[in-house]
Image 1 (cartoon, protein in one colour):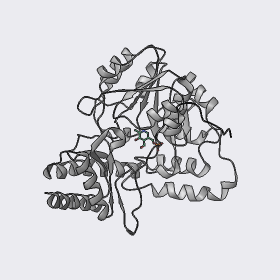
Image 2 (tube, rainbow, N blue to C red):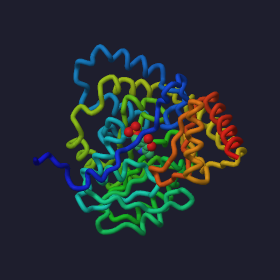
Image 3 (cartoon, protein in one colour):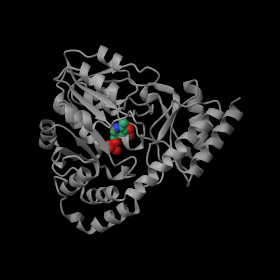
Image 4 (cartoon, rainbow, N blue to C red):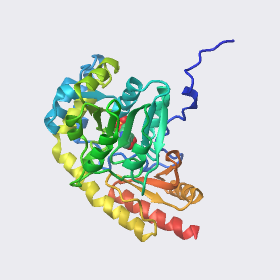
Length: 363
Ligand SMILES: Cc1ncc(COP(=O)(O)O)c(C=O)c1O
């Protein structure tokens, strides 16, 4: 009997696998597997979410107007050129489906964020992966792979799962080498953690060109991953395309309220940034003492080399017995590595102690 069949290529997509959040039989989980905020959301965001709850029978503002205005004020950007999404994931998917046709190419770096090839294949496009150099996106290898079919170049900056970044000058070089009819998507999900002088989240490139868009999220520094709020800042023509194609009420009502409150609570945001600035170097230093120097990261996680897929799996399994969740990176072509988020002090201390025990018993 005939049954509905998806478009060719859809069943070739390996579903996205998120970080684990539970271990059967263990109550206190230390979750360092999803790059979430260590300190959680602003109490003001929680209060705003709760205050909005009685209105949940109402549709949200389909244009997320107050939220776009708050983002615009906070970042000095024109709210008319901002689009909000149910997480930045939604906007990344939309960009690919709106700009790539079947057979077109979506270029990204090999250890880039897993959503890019998934979005490409959803559109029937061909994901083209360029190798990194020193676990860092390489403008040269990306540009070598540009073809007449390249429609989008997608770059997470800093990148997940490597934690490395490209400077403003390198982004400009990448853009300069791209065809003018291809779109550069700068995914700056971890921008708020970066304090390097040569870094840009991408607003300046968006302002200078009509084929660059930047995506951002409330899921990381702002600690609202469960609410699904992201946004994009782009040229008017691309913003128009996103507004025509996104679901009309894509950001829910309490999420909009919580995101506005989170932006206003600059004290909490600073606390989250300070926490990361203190504990990211500590985590890297402790891992180095254990003989596991991580890839240098500017984000809120580190990529830890275990030497082989078997040893990475054994370490992950050992940590699970202590209630600690980290993530082996096989899905990102890095099966020798574990990715570990910057958690709270006691969580990180427990992780380092457990890694020390693992190394002793694995000897
Ligand atoms: C590089 C990168 N981009 C985008 C996202 C998606 O974030 P969200 O959809 O929660 O905004 C993530 C989430 O892990 C990420 O690591």
